[in-house]
Image 1 (cartoon, helix red, strand yellow):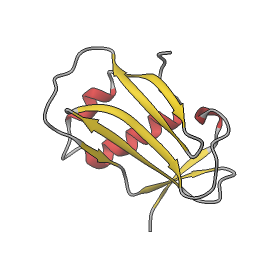
Image 2 (cartoon, rainbow, N blue to C red):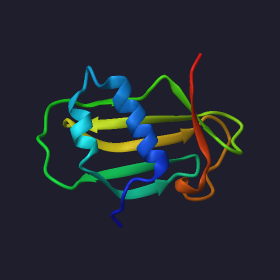
Image 3 (cartoon, rainbow, N blue to C red):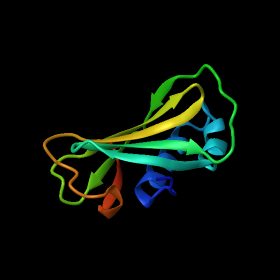
Length: 119
């Protein structure tokens, strides 16, 4: 099922783009073209897989990027890690994973979250 990004996904991707805009300026244009192909709940996290509304040019860039901010989710003991996968110069997926025994037992858009600067 294809859908729009939810608030958590939008916030995380926006933060990642802001932190890496100098090195990867194309991300801002790509972000505007994204929609969610599917969300895979792994129990300890999610893979949010993306498609593009319009075709974007491929490159040889393959990397993962994140930010210096922690993701805190209400009810979780530990912070949550997240990273954006870029494959062939395109945003491929967003991975969100708990840092401990916390389990994602509902849809990711049902959680209350906060981004906090790492010390």
